Image: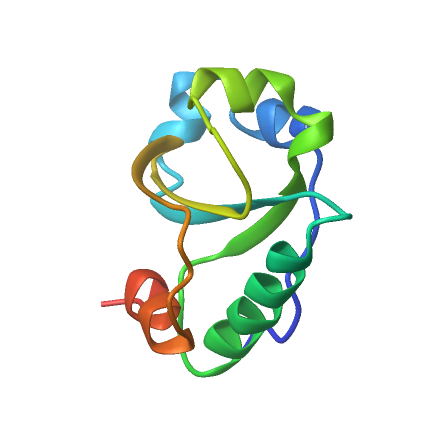
Length: 111
């Protein structure tokens, strides 16, 4: 089980998803957008860490929105923290309010 949230960059994520073929087979994953000076983001990340260590969940990565203008504009992210669930590289759920660890786990659990 994942006990920390791996960080990626916009460039790395876009490179991994640069073709329809590479995105089509990816299935479900999620990106957690944050900024380093955001206190609510730090709390949400701790909650997310607990959720991902609680059982089998879809892959989760974090990305600093300050260095992600392309994804921010493409998906019209308006604030942080923001958790986006993706299916084959396309958003299917976008959450700004991380209500509880149970909510996060429910959004991310497999099956």
